[in-house]
Picture 1 (cartoon, helix red, strand yellow):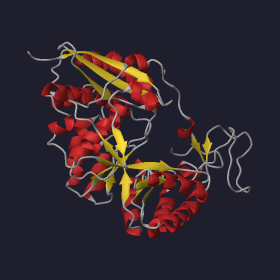
Picture 2 (cartoon, helix red, strand yellow; picture 1 turned 60 degrees about the vertical axis):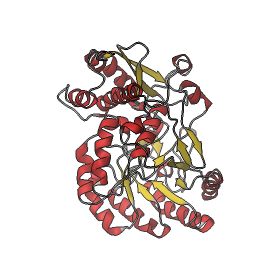
Picture 3 (cartoon, one colour; picture 1 turned 90 degrees about the horizontal axis):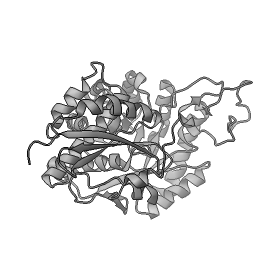
Picture 4 (cartoon, one colour; picture 1 turned 180 degrees about the horizontal axis):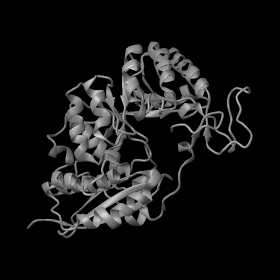
Length: 410
């Protein structure tokens, strides 16, 4: 076999669970040899597809598949301005596909390329939510019965927003919106901050210490209120508190650390190394949980994980529904080899996704198991993918508003 080069880069948009996924297929000069990657940026999937189809994909054609590090570096700076989420997602799709190809050429799973397993399966955390504390507790109990030990708990979604019929709703009759309130997902941050500690007091009383409990603030609070919430949650021994602050408020982490002993997880919205570098150096977070496609794929994730490990920071890669099964598999292969692996978020999927992506990991007893096929060990059935056209447009949950209609961070 002579030098294998990229012949073509193709982008497939599909939504088997109703969430748009961006899948990248890199075809090579070797007949039948291709790789798959995840470039999912759900809210701007068409923008990622345009970059891949018209710019980065054609630019990649003819380049050797073996030189992943060189490809990543040159592609990342090819537009001069860099570290934006659209370009990073597009780059991630090709980067992951090149690692898939590398594994197939070596006849090894990707985790073998990075030194082999540190563990045989990956511990997962699941999500529990409900409109009452009892409903949340019932979901926690269901996950425990299914063999899980780690559960992230919310009460009414991010910020405690109530489901409604398109009109703003609040738990207190004294909270209401002005006339002609703009559309969006309304919530009351003060009510949210007061109720969350009640939820975790209830969960600890119901389940004791036999479950690891997590919570995601999802950047819904002003910094000082995030500090107050972390203080109030300290007695309930959370596994970690996630995204208590927005990336714009990183300077508040030192105060948050001083005022609460809860382990802190951060990074879902990160796209640039400088966002996590200072947090590591000052020992201000305990878990890094970036979205792999938003930092540019597996190549930067390997560097990030090594950097984090030097400061005692563990990984908790972002693993919601807006990561394709290919992206989830990439998370898991990293989890298997990293000494500083912490925990893996897991959204789960239906038989529809398993039909679109043959070779999905198996979940048993709260652990995920990947297969031992070369590369990622997962494939794409394009005929099945076509049955689930993308659900384009901005989702309502990103259009967050305070009671008076002020736009807030999602």
